[in-house]
Structure formats: structure tokens, C-alpha cells
Length: 210
Image (cartoon, rainbow, N blue to C red; front, side, top):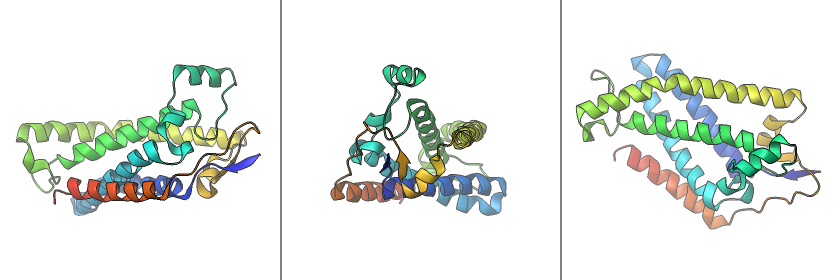
């Protein structure tokens, strides 16, 4: 049975985050001339994560963190082939939460980063130079972990696609096959979407130092 699992805001968030992170990784490798765009894309990541935070607590049931947090019980159930659910698998949820956490860490440390020459994050001047250098070091040193995590995520998607599970298609049109016993996810209330969008805007406004 195929049901609508991923609502449009969740799917739009996913693909916008893909574009923002890919763009940030590309611009940082192109040199100083592209650092302004790197910063803008980092702010976009902050806004998107602000949206996802609200959506993860108050959004549709399949997108809520409570529905896919990988508890030991859920991990054991998946190991024995007994887990059933419309959204992320427990193991897949580990990857999702790890990436959201690392994206957030990269975005926040970037706000305070500075190379003391051509680039300073919006909040770099609000902390001591020593702390800014420390956060800048963390921002750069975790970039390799970001590549590793993204690589593992893409390999997992490829493995699922090879096994006939169309994860990419589900994130495009929102529908995926589930066992007949699984209930369709409950949609979010319209005001939750408004609150999530307002939170995203506020997050960008605060992060930009305005």
C-alpha cells in the first residue's frame, strides 16, 4: 500500500537544505571571492534548521522527532525485521539527526568565525579574538566530518535504491509503500506552518547580526 508520508513543506525543506549545504561547500572551496555567498548560504541553513526545529516538534506526525528518534527498542525491532512505520527507519533516523546536528554546529560556529583578513562571520566581533579563533578552527576541522557523513548518507540511499526502495522518489512526490497496518501520518495545523516560517525568518535575522 502506498500512502502520502512526506508533506510538501518537509520535502521542500529537504531539497533546499541540500542546495544550501552543497552551495556552502562549493563556495568555500572557490576562494575568498565567494565567501560572501558562503556566508549567505550558511544563514540559509540557519533559517532552514529553525524551520525544521518547529516542524519536528509540532508538524505532521511523520516529520516529528518523536516519531523516529532511534530508541533502543526501535533499533532492536528493525534489527529483527519487526519495525513498522511510515517515516524514517531507526537507523536512517540516526543519519538524519547526525546531519542536522552537524549542519547546525557548522552554521553556528561559522557565525563567529574569522580569518583575520578577508572574512568575518556576523557575530565574530561579539566574542573575544581567542574564542573566534577557536570556533573558526572547529568550523574548519569538522568540514571533513561533514563530507564523511554526507558520503555515508548517499551510499545508504544508493543501497536502498538498489534494493528497490525508492527513497529519492518518496522525497520528490511524498508517497512510499508501507505495510497495510501502518496508519497514514496526521497533517500539521496551518498555524504550525506559519510559526515555523516565522521562526525561520527570525533565526536568519538574529544570525545575520541585524
